Length: 141
Image (tube, rainbow, N blue to C red; front, top):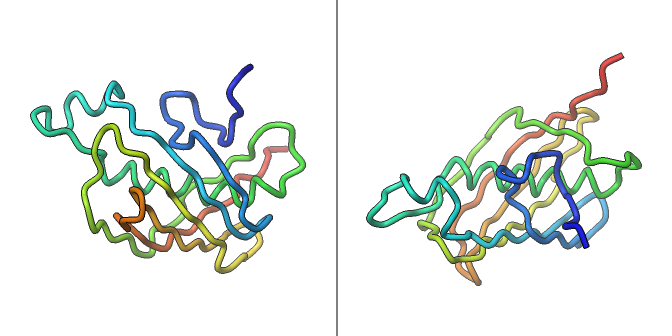
């Protein structure tokens, strides 16, 4: 059975393995197991690899996109892009073989822009949090 696709990203840039809609169009929880064989772990501090902070932000943005995607009627995942990182605080490093859990909630919907609060955990430890704004990419005519 093929893996369910949650974002329009290619397989090497999907940071979501599981998705749980907590409140349709409002709140989601996603998970990503950080496989030690992922290519960036080879060179991101080879002696003591860790998950890059920019990928934490990307994982959070993909989770936030799942909120709007949960109410989409399109046959494939819509495209949402990061419009602004209002704040993002890294509290702890994240390592290979850990499972990143991301909770995202829609705070404000401006039509084509949405502001999301995101929290990233490893088990129950809060490792990062922030506020990001996504933009809906409208289909070209």
